[in-house]
Structures are given as C-alpha cells and as structure tokens.
Length: 359
Image 1 (cartoon, helix red, strand yellow):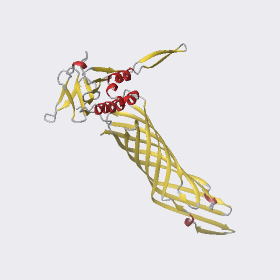
Image 2 (cartoon, one colour):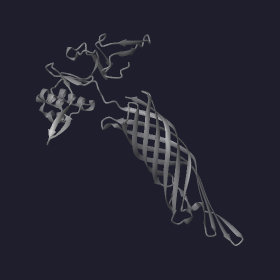
Image 3 (cartoon, rainbow, N blue to C red):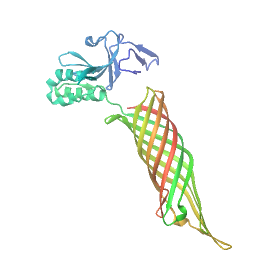
Image 4 (spheres, rainbow, N blue to C red):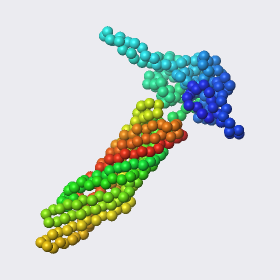
C-alpha cells in the first residue's frame, strides 16, 4: 500500500493474489489502512467531512471524540459536532505599531468544546501545538478522562537509518616529551577509511534529533619522527591499525524537500588492533657510533578517546536511499602514554549511502 500524504486523492494497492496495481479513489472505497497502525477514511463517507474535493482523511484518534487530519486538523466532539482547527495570523496594534501574531483560535475552540467536560486538561490545552505529537496525546487523554473507548491510530514512528561508505582522513599526533626531548615533534599520517553506521530518531524528545553509532576501520597508519639532539640521533616509527567506535547526537536542519544539513557532536573510542613500534638511538663519539634500542621507553596506548564534531550534507535520491558527504574533526588523548604527554587530531571527509526505515 502506498500513501505518501494523509490527504492524497488516491490509494494505490498491490494485490497479493494477482500482484497487480489497483487504484482507488475516495468515491470507490470508504477507508483503507494498516491494521492497528493507520486508518484513512474517505471524506465522501462522512457527511461532516465532505468537501468539494474528494480526499482520504487520516484518522488519528477514534472514540467518542475523534481527531482527524487532512490539510488541517479537525475533531468531532461527543455530540457529533465537527470543528476544523487552524492557527491563522491576526493583526495587533501596539503603541501605533502593527504586528502579526498567531491567533491561537484553535486553542479557544478546544477549550470551549472539550475542556469544560474535563477541567484537569486546561493546562494541556493551553500548551497545544498544531502538530501530531502534541494533538494526539491530548485527545487520547481527553477520551480517557470521559471514560470513552478509543483507539489511537497514529504513533510517532521510530526511524532507523543504516549505511556505510568510504572516507579519507589525516591523523596528526603531537608529542611533548617530558623525559624524552627528542619527541617534541608533530607527525601526521593519512589514508582511507571504511565505515558503517546505524542511527535512530528520538520521537519522544524531538523529531530532529538522532543518535548515531558508527564503526570505522583506519588501517596502515604510519608515523615517523627523526630528530637530532647534540651528537645523538633518534628515529621513532609507529605503524598501527585503528578500529574506531563512535557515538554521536545529531540535529537535522531541512533545507529543501530533498536536502538537509546535520550537525553532530559526540565521542570516539579508538582501539588499536595492531601496532609496530620502534625507536632507535644513535650516539656519535669521535669516529665511533653506538646504536641503542630505545623502544622500551615508549608505551603505545591500548585505546584512544576523542571528542568529535561533524557537519553533514544529505541528499535524498529516493524515499529509500540518501547520499551524503560528511566533514569530521576530532581531538583527544594521544598515541603514546606514561613517558610523554601527547595529543591526537583527526580531520576527515566521508562519502556514504544512508538507507532509512521506519518501525
């Protein structure tokens, strides 16, 4: 069943028996829906809902008092009276200046028709907004208050996205030697990243917030520091593979119908899956050169934590597939521990596919 809008003029249905597409108009059928989850009723079957244009109307709450949605909200009270709800602008004049403000006429209608039958909802009515996650709970509470049997057809869906892709990043390690002055250097390593992620909406908090968990593999990262201190030469080399597990909270800004910007912040934990560390010291005394293995003075961290910020541009190719580009910046504790105080910075870009599903 395909239903892209609550007030669409047709219902497209694929029969499981014939696998053929059938198209129904509001004049053909009384209603359609998903059992226990959604109900759309023809406005031709409800005399109070009839309008010049035939349409399917979404039933959000059905009981002695029912809530509907099409191009606006409407409700039918316990006496069968039907009321449409809007929040049009009205003009006010203050100290000779004209202002346009929301009329909140819908709150006055609800207060006059419903709150007088359930006074404990007066504060809830004053806080109402014309959106599903505000209107549906109110009418659910009202039906409970008047001891009415009712059914809520609308539930905020939990939206889950998953996907993956490729990226490129530069990791910069800055080591400030306390006991080891030769490590007063900054070294960088760059390479490809491979990642996958899953994210979930938070409909009970804010529909624009999402929590994202992602895992990334950054392999074959090589760091090298070559320094000289007097007659001593130091060569430090570190090669490692990183597995990054990150948790972010993201906020989504719709730009157009198909484009949105996402801003995220969170924490990354880098687990070193393998490493190869060497530190060679050469000391020159006259014509003699003494070589020493200084690897034991360094200890590679088992895990590295970073704070991360991201900026994402997401484009919807279809309802079932998005593409995105993401800029990332992270910083935190460094690659080495104990003998040096050090930091790590990561700058990267990622390209991926994002697949949305709803539950």
